[in-house]
Image (cartoon, rainbow, N blue to C red; front, side, top):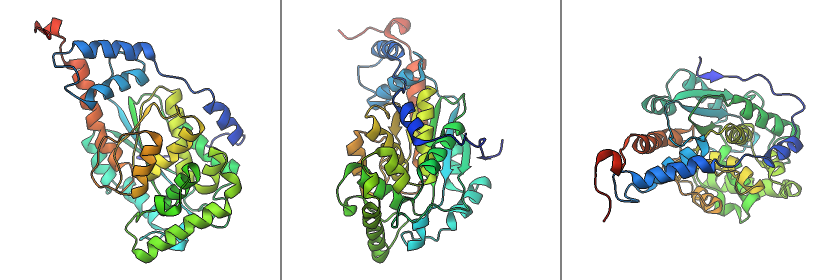
Length: 347
């Protein structure tokens, strides 16, 4: 298949009320599978806890895959791309047309994510969301209408296929760290300065424009901030809404999720705000150098797997985390127990 996919258009009846109903009935963890994985973990030929977070990750995979022996043979990377009206305000070091140009680079195998996906032996898919139609400038009002937002969420849900052991999510969209900062501020409070960073590398003037844009967006959309999904419509972007939908679809399909950096985590944070358990099947791959990401991770109670001063997006950090998850699963299933190896246990 081509690295760029377009799922069938979602039903036009998609609306945020339906999304709220779906969020109210998300399936929980498979506690039986998790308990079985925990029991095996205690018997493996090593001191208890000696493999640190690798042990936790193996049990987490088992719990959300719904099988006592976790596996990671078919990872899937999904990158959603969208265009933002606020990008015309000089909030990025790059012009808005770079979004479409980078999608072309993904298609032709030229970008960082292509190399990282190959290294992780992962299936890469790139999903375009009406790149020729930017969202509205959210400093003047909502970025999206509720129907547009719900349609993008439904698109993200439909993009998730059966079969992957894990899905790594990422995004591409010039201006979306501005949207991420606005979303995070709208969801969790604080001042724009708490959430705005340099993104693609803006200078001081660009940073000031980003802060001003976020402040204006919050003021222009104050009436939407009481509800997480309405906040997503007002302050997000189509690719961020699609990521939220993909996270929901993975939960329903028992597929663990690896979230990438700031923009991706902000998209998923909408679901956490609606239900604090909604991201239990997700891990965050890395802590972005964006200062708002650390604050957001604290709000979500998520500890990232990596901290490499990255800020690229396009699922690059999520792809880097996949070999760690593969290692966790391989150790858990391939190691012998004390009884199997004939090794004496702790005295």
